[in-house]
Length: 163
Image (cartoon, rainbow, N blue to C red; front, side, top):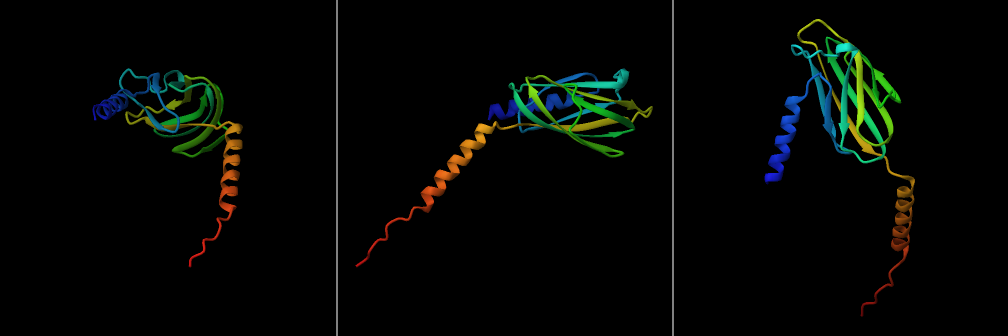
């Protein structure tokens, strides 16, 4: 019970500390992580034209990252993850969605480029989900297991005779 309370406290604290300055977070594969940028005094939302968000805690490997973000009085012109542009980018006036294929070790650095409007309501928010990409040998083992299961099921049990 204490572990759940501590985990919830850490997540709540991390959510409160998220702002538009350069940020660093620890994430886990398959878990969606939220980030945001708010126009706080002295904060510099997209100051210098970009915000940098660093995600750590992932082992070396192949990952697929899905990114979605939306802005209010903010024009986010591009996003890159470890310097790579998205494989696919669906951009709208308020929201965007992109996916990245990453091979390497963490930390992974997300860079958002754009221009913040003069409004005090200028803000953006987003979600990133990182999923591990299975190795081909995993698929081979899956197929072998399904084949053995199929052979086992296809064997007919001897009929029992009742007298």
